[in-house]
Length: 192
Image (cartoon, rainbow, N blue to C red; front, side, top):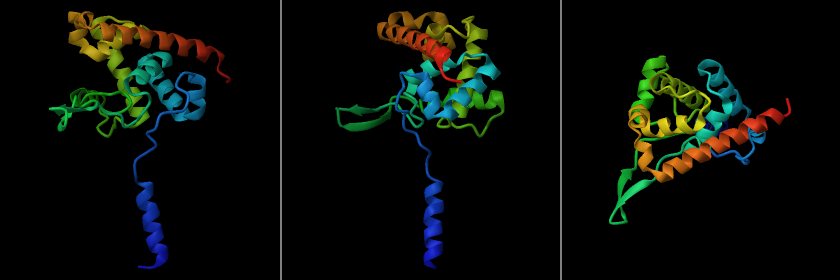
């Protein structure tokens, strides 16, 4: 094989590798996030138009689910502190969607090629799920706190109030709401 073909093959294989799944540098400023990763902002705007879910709500929930890391996974569980027993759950990607819920989304939307580690698909999933929460639990699209609780506990868990016994989750939901408010205020001042 010629040197040129070997180099071309290596470059081709390297280009087929995974995407840039690292977190943006400044997660506390939505304007900087939009400037650094304009594709994230475009994806959230598309989901906002399609599902009526405000960008600040999506951004705050993604922040708390994955810190905008595209290939985020739950930690491993260990028996006796050393024997790996698998991951805590099947949650994966920007939205930390579980396998079964992701498959429900794919069926419902007809988007069989959707991937949890692609921001466009993750934001569309989140919009779809939040829209389901509006229909099933009556939570407004803009209510980041309760949308997050329903997202974390599932529609049935939210309806049962399972979150009320989890003080840590209530604190996180308050943080999601605060972050959504912060992002909304920042978006008002973002340079056009």
